Length: 275
Figure 1: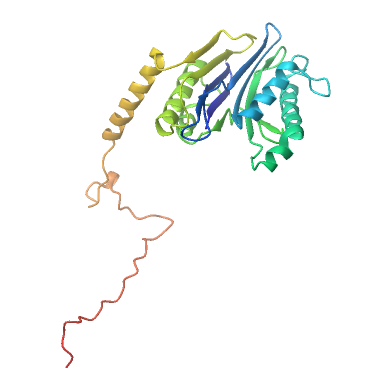
Figure 2: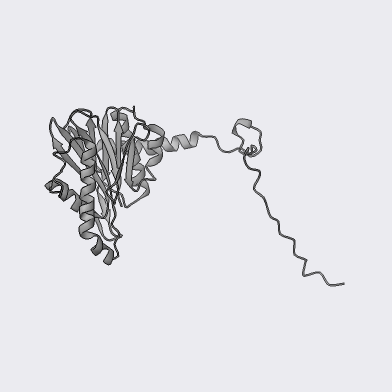
């Protein structure tokens, strides 16, 4: 399993990926799911992958070699949208080559990517690219994408992040999202790869690999857990007698009535003698 999250914000982009792969409880490995492409002063791209590792590695290799049939690659794409088309075409090339063999072996063609970056003359952009090679783009209203095991880390992102969120705050939020996922799913694991890309920089100044010894992530793990427990204990418990109106849990629902109770008939007492 995998967890990757990418955020497209007014100030730039945040990418965070774990490195655990597993094909069962006794086949656990560590593989990088983040790949960076940089031409300083002109373009910068980041790619994160989830799905079948052989498929995603084949896609990455095509992109690194720049050998697509139509002659387009990440280095000559005119903008980030065209670069996302290149990534989609790489997926299709792997599909055309491997799908029948995978189908014969009973293996799904499973490939899901987050791709983003910036080309000179445009704003930073972020895309979620699917197994068919098609994709959607992040917007100010929907400014982040997740792939892999997304459900545990989604609530904090929904509550905190928006397009105007500063990069440092978004980075903290992404790390808390990852910590929540690590805590709930053993198939996602350290080390983590983190990239924070500042708008119009066209280089990777803020990229780090995080493991158990990283002091900031260790602090996040400890403090977030403690604060959650404190907030939980501060919330009043439900009141069932209606004495405190503002905290009563038995207030009448506006849309539905009470849950119906279907009562069975009492059985006759078998010990009584028949008259």
